[in-house]
Image 1 (cartoon, rainbow, N blue to C red):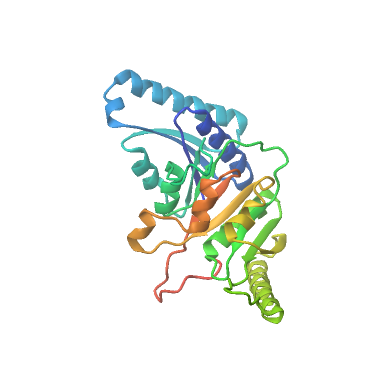
Image 2: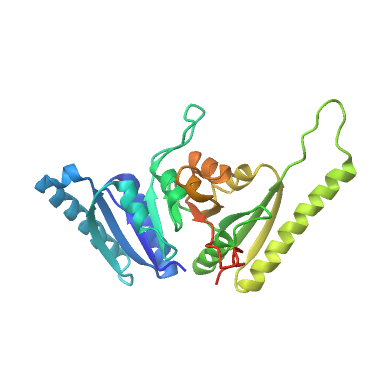
Length: 288
């Protein structure tokens, strides 16, 4: 359960957008806010630079207190590497929010931004906020893949309930590729489509049982997962996607869907890591 949102602050316009988004979200979820600026050691040796960082961070915290006097807001300046320090704030009770000015393009293939790195390595959810028009955005979107991490589903359900917005469950499927001149048997295609429909229905039923107050809308689409989720980018208040890492690999890579969404980001995107494993090695279904 998220109790605090950590805002990655550096005084930039991108950080201001993330801060405003995080405060607006916290007004619905009642999370505490923590404005954190990381100053590298070389700048910390310069007393004036450190003073400016402290003043900038306190000013932003003061702005948020004026906007949302009901929220608990604190400001911190820490010294060190930005990625390392922000990752250290991440756990299952904190959401780390940061802004980005980056947008994907055919000529930009790596997508290895600070947001991507944090999302791949953090132990708690990471929200990456691009430059976009917030007006008219409504609804929380989450992907369902048949083996969907319940941590992402639970997070998305709580987001929708707190915002009093619908939760869109999106499940994408695609036909097997064929070679030669033979087309797929239509009966087989119908069976595949029905199987995916049943997967979406089962996930929806489990989610509604765990969160009866959530308003769920189901979407079955013949597409790749990232494309199916991206179709909601222009209208969603948030897109939630789970990511599963395996040992040290999580430190370097996101899943293809998470990575693609962050590479071509044009909606607030929250990446939720896998739920911790219990003693038996099984993930708890729809974590409480």
